[in-house]
Image (tube, rainbow, N blue to C red; front, top):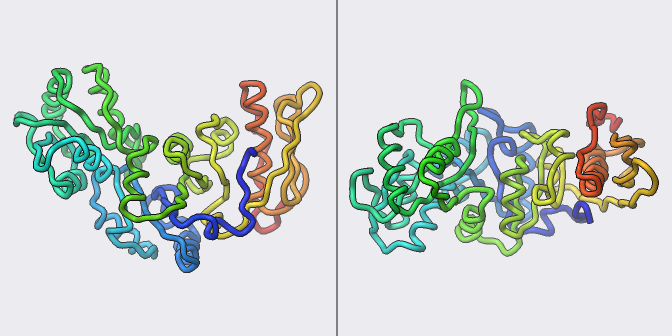
Length: 345
């Protein structure tokens, strides 16, 4: 099956939604349109919500305060960060009170202390190094820490995100520091954030849930992270993933479910019927769902019909992935335009 189906709505099939933040719940300083209401309905129908982030600089309380200001009810216990996941990785290996060199911001320091470990400076005796995004981290400290890693100090990184959103545009993220230190030392750190699984494991440990669902907007972190953890995922299209990224998604980046926004937690997900193609140029076969049909002809997706916008995206994804798997080449989607949400055309 190319995409999963759920006739009753995902709130009935899962008991925990692990929600990425930027691009899913909010974009910049504003809530995604409809997101607060969709999340309130999901919670009212019994779905636990956990807000997870690769950003290790902010504390859970700060994140919760931001969410609340946007109309999304959240407490500190509902938020799980890559800093907390990194602290868990450290605490699982080190004795209580162990000294850890810390390069990062307040969120990482709070997480390390809460895990029963002792943050120390780059010149102090230590049993590990932990790093996370911190705008005030000094280059001299990065250099000293890098030398210590080269000489054998165990290293845990909160995440490897190469970019972060800022009020002045997209800027270098913690992943740039990780790449720099890794190239100098030849050492690959243990990574706690998505797409590695410690953050998702830590979320289930803290919030609970036997049937978790990852909800995200990024294929390479959110959806790939769900694959790594062996859990189902919902991709929403309110963030960085658009048509070019979607049709080129590798198998490990493909979501279980697909929806334009967080209404996808509430709405049914009908089965996409896919038929293998025959003949030249039909490697993607055809797909049908909810009044839409799509096929690939000479590497180009053709879509006919009308219906829900979500179903349009589903048939396009289905035939595009079949074509990619069969030929190794992504389809040409340059002429495709998603239908209008009001008219379905």
